[in-house]
Structures are given as C-alpha cells and as structure tokens.
Length: 507
Image (tube, rainbow, N blue to C red; front, side, top):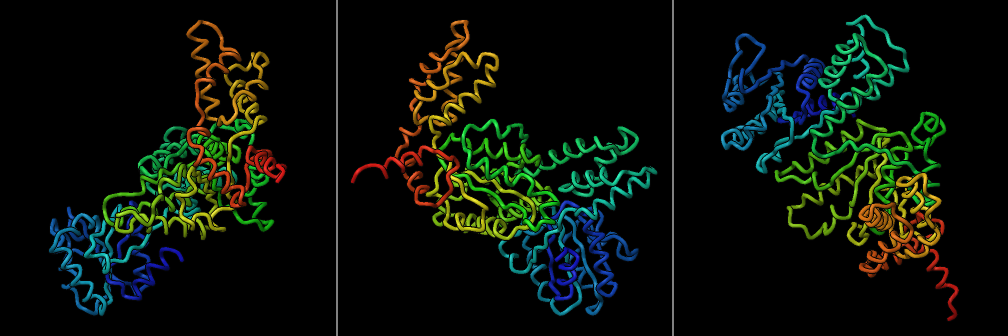
C-alpha cells in the first residue's frame, strides 16, 4: 500500500493524530493536500512555531509561538467541518504537560469529527504517555517514477533531452535521496556543465555518501577488493560466481527472485569481512556497512525509528550489499538485557524484514560466536545460505601467502618458498598470516634489506595463533559445522580433513 492510500485510509477511519517522521516537509505537505482533496476537498491548515497558522487570511498568525493555542484552534472550527491540521516540528513540544494533555483530550474529541491532526517531525520522539494516541506513518523517499518526473522537469527547464539509457542511469543513481537533495545535486551538475551529462552520476554518488554519513547509521563503504584477493574458500566463491547475474533484468524474466543474503560464521581473521567487500566489488554494487550498535538510542522509540530508517535507506539504494559485521555481538543475550525490550523490538523488526523483503538488498552478516545468535536468526528463509569459514588448510595457506606477497613483492614472488611457509604455519588464520608478513617486513627493514622466507618463519614463531588460545570456542564451532548446521566455505577445509581422519581411525 502506498503512502497516499494508507493516509487516505487513516483519514476515513478517523485516526485523530497521525505522526509522520520525515525531512521532506514540502513533498509530504503537497501529498497531504492531494489526499485532502480526494477526501471531499477537506481544508488543510498548516502551522509552525514562528509564523503560526498560514493560508486563510482570517487565521494567519494564529497560535504563533504558542503550541497549546495551535491545538485550541482545532476546537474553534465547527464540529462538522472536515479539516486536516498539519503541525510542523511538533515533536519539540510533546514533553510539555499542557501540550500532552491537550493532545489526549483532542484524541477523544476527534474520534467523532471529520478532523485529523498531522504532526510532522524529522525524527520519531514520542513520550510514553502519548504512545497510545499517536499513529506513526512512514513517508518513503521518492520512487523511480517520482525521480523521473523531477529530472524531466529540470530537463524541460533547460531545453535538454537525454538518451533513455542515460536517463535510467541518473534515475537509478538518485534513488535513496530526498527530492530536495536530488534538486540540489542536479542543479549543481547543470551549473558545472551547463547541462546534465552521464558523468554526473559521480556527483550524485558523492551526494548519496553525504546523505548516508549524516544518518550516522550506515556507512558508504568503498569496495576495492577482488574475489581473487581471497585465498581458498572455493565453495563460497563458486556459490557467489553462480549468483553474479541474479540482480539483472534477465534473471527476473527467467523467474529468479532476488538473492536474499548470506550469513558467514567462523573463526576470527578467516576472511569473512574481506568476502563482504569482494562481493560488492565483483557484483558492481554499492556496499553499505551497518554498525548495529548505532541503532540503539536513548529515547523511547528512537531505536525502532533508526531501524526503520536503515531499512528504508537500504531499500531506496537497492540493488546494494548491506554488510553487518559481527552481528552476534549486537544481539547477544537478547532475553537478559535490561532495556525495556528495545533490543527485542529492534531484533524483531530486523528479522521480519530479512524474511519478508522483496527488494534487491543482499545482506552479508558475519558472526564469530554462533552461541550468541538467537535461534530465529539461523532459521531457513532469513538467508539464502549459512557458510562456515574455518581455518585454512595448508593448500589455502599457500594461496593466502601468494595473494599477500604478490601485492607486497610482485617482482620477487619466486624468491619466497610458499610451500615451506604454508607447511610451517599450521592453525594460522588469514589475518595471522598477514600479521606475520608485516612483522617479517619490520625485521628486514630494521636491517636495511628485503625480508626473506626465513624472516617470515622467524616472525611466525613469535605468534601464538588464536586456534591455540581459543581452542574450546573453535572446537565448538567446528563441531557445530560438522553437524550439518552450515555449508563449508572450503572444498578441502581443515574441518573436512579432521572428519576424514576420525572416520579412518580404527575402533
């Protein structure tokens, strides 16, 4: 159901007070006016703290700097006169006892009258005593059709015509921006070049990064890593290669649904985060990083509002990759948190969206401690697949050394004994191999020479891998994966080797 349909329904059902969190005052007010005309040409009254009521000459300025008087104006009109009262920035006054009491009195009165109060606010901030009388209605960002109208309006003003493919690219790149930001960035592009050009997509993407930074919930993450930068994990790579074209229109015509996402579970430092970045780069999709801790805020209702904002922004930017790092830490101890159920509500909103979303947002979540994850997260339907990323085998360690040394010493790669390095570093993760090479470089640099295989082995001898210091946790993870709870990311993982050895032992 669209915003207009839902708003019209609330007007017909005589919902007395509607709370719309949005930063797009101009667009939402225009939509409200259109809906009011559909509802028997209702009168629309708009109030703000500085100017009071606007529009009707007899009422101009009424309630200026007086929010209680602005509410009393509702009772001045005849009971049978249909009207919509739009109150801007009214969230700032909801904590006032007189405003709160007046709103609750009006909520009773307006149930029997064809009048509705609409509170506009850039954020959700609802006191407990008003939670039962306010109805929150989300106002979505502009869709592709609305963006097309805005771009064509600007084009007609400049007398320019655009190729259909270029227009589609501009529309797609503008998704996720408010109308005001779209107008601003397109005006900037026209001021820069005198017209809109295909290269202006870069300007729009920069505006998009700015928007995402201002939300302080999502980060627009630059992804430059390639699938080839990942050593090993052949099963996971094959799975990703098969789904590379799944976001195309050809896939939709074939009948394929959009891929839902991936949960990567495993030991720290084994390449889970690197994989998330490589997926975005390989599929040529923007990468959004969510810090789940930022969803939780102090005010009642704000955490849930931030969760909805994150979902809305992700879907507006789709197709995209949403990367959630260490999701196990965010929802650990879900039932024992003393936060009045905020974590449970955020988690419920999030997993419901995971299960029901139809938008092309591919979620890549990583977790180190599977025991901390709620069981609902692991149910089928939340993600397309759950992969276990274990410690690399000797062959994979060789590949990891090759990847790093190819980057560090591309012309001297043949001088390093990769087989020996892989053999001498059992139980090392990819992150520990990288740290070993950094330490070896320090050894060589301090002696004013290039680092050698022996330097790498010397550095490795000084590192105690996590596989030894956190043996119990890693053993649990491997037993969990061996029980068939997840697919193995590697074709010949150390876990597979261990299972084979166990099968070959005589009873």
